[in-house]
Image (cartoon, rainbow, N blue to C red; front, side, top):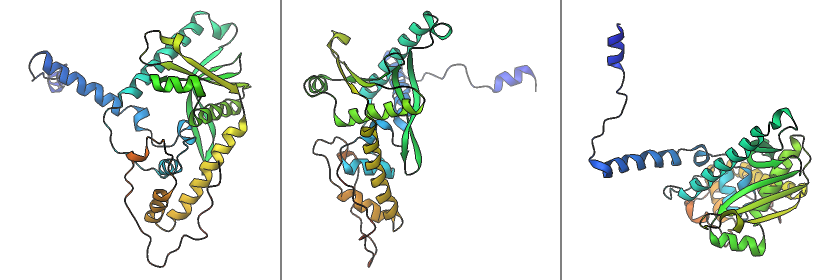
Length: 279
């Protein structure tokens, strides 16, 4: 095959533009952007992560552990904004460390977006990417890019249970990686306020491994129940998930389709299901 034949068989350098004007171009642009958002690694993640282990809703935590899919609720634009801010903060802080030649002088103080393993559920390692670890302060930092209502709650009540547990799980991950962790912190940053970081809310408390261990123990109890029920049938497992208590403030319950199911005649769940136990 000649060079001319090779090039003639290649696709065109640019895709054909069949639509009309700026409106057509905007339609194509939107399709590319939305496809990237929906198919990002964060959006496609299936295994439960540290950010979900502290979910106070037994039903939804069990559904996540069972691998249930949520109904499609459109393009996750707000999470995309948060992901974008995270990426830019990582760039800023990493550039700062590089510019002061940290690697060859004092060593890196601020470690951004490192993955740590926080524990196991059902014998499987659970890991997640931590936003920042300050090796000098011995503190983990997690950025939360939030709206005004969440900012107000953080200012008056501090971190929610799910955020607090996530912070201590990351702390445990850094300890397992060989670091000393003294504090865990969550920095709530406004998504819609022109004042920016000055209006943010910094929550922090001393690192407590027991917070992480209790959350992992609860998840492992649920996992054991799911495994026992799945040995009967998927229907038995799903029926149990549907009957679990639901947190009154849960956003995710409505995104799962809990079809009513029954076990086969004569089958009983008695003795198979371990108590979920108090948190």
